[in-house]
Length: 521
Ligand code: MSP
Image 1: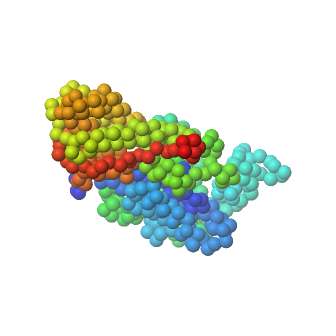
Image 2: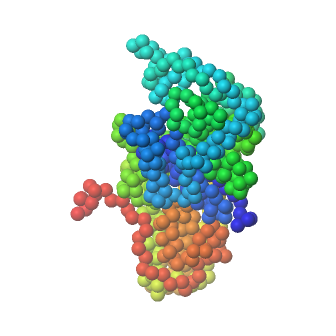
Image 3: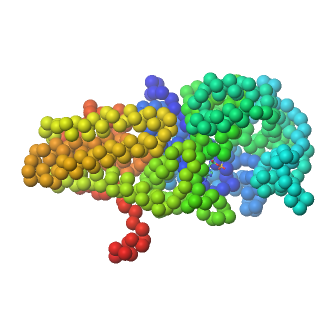
């Protein structure tokens, strides 16, 4: 629809030298939750994810596997694509940097940078760590058995290589002015200060081509060189909009992106190099780069050698899709580091989803089904307590969620939703509809109506986080498809009395540990 506001959000594109793990899944889910929230709130959303398939690391991974590089990237990229149905991601494009549309875009931006005079050919000499695909300064190295070793532990060799350079140093003042003018460009705020202080120091020109291997986008006009993987990778965000055609409808509609969501380790590429490339090419920088933190697993760094990585498949198997999504979003303030502990996940899922929200829905709908002829009752006059809960559900919660989502504070938004759930549970305990059944059946109907209406609003507001379960809640209330967006979180769309419902089934299962099962059985 023409009058919808556009909203464009991206995940990083994932390297295909690894299999998908919790870290990748986390970024993708956070973006998905935001994308769904905005869609439900009436925006025209574009949500992009994909894979980063060039560069030395990928080339080496393929060689190690003894497979043709293209066949290797096809296979591993598919592993990332498979997360989409598995985790219920709503991305509407999946980009691969080996696609022709992307090669065209990467070469397109390169040509713009050449035209602008921001690329020059020179010689690079320095200490190069093949493993890290990075150069190090002499002062960063230590001597180990006569070898130069980088802080990462990688061995370095002295390399002299012809290389193209991007005149990053020339963009220092403009970048600083840009940050000043856009204080929300990097979030959270601590990261913004980090980026500013990095750029305030000395900015060296950036080597942006390689001649030592050829698994990359060829530099236009000089086939000896392939582009440095980061200039290639960052461009994906505009490839997907039709770049180099800046008149393409998607480019015009969605650029500049609202959010690039990235891990803190790749913030510099997104918040320094990328806006510099874009400004040099005469394009606008994105509106916000949000850097989230890193997960450890049971207190330890996730690593291949420890074999402790959690895959998205593990998550789904252990907790289910929606509960995993909920836990990851609820447990850690977005932007902070976090630790994944199985015990925390079980406790959180059981207490918030199974006991609080799930029970509320199950208790209410069972009582309605049993005591109100299987129909949502017609309410009588609302008392103060009823009006309070209805107002909280229909009017007060959503504006707060919007404020939290505008800052990407999803965990806070979930706290607000749970606050409403708790209030509804307190209400049901105070009103005690099971007692009213005998004492005042008309009043019982009003109370159950208020609860059903609260559950309807909760179902709508949980759609971004737990899409399947929230949809089931709405199915149970027989809410039509065209009344399932945030415009329906309002008294005007309140559930009509007389709506027939089926016998409800529990939606959020409790996670029962094996030991507990054995003890019980
Ligand atoms: N290919 C680059 C990104 C290019 S974007 C133009 C890349 N890929 S990656 O696969 O190595 O990492 C992708 C994302 O996963 C990064 O944002 C990184 O921060 C995130 N994570 C990797 N391990 C992580 C954790 N343990 N915890 C949270 N996120 C982590 O970098």
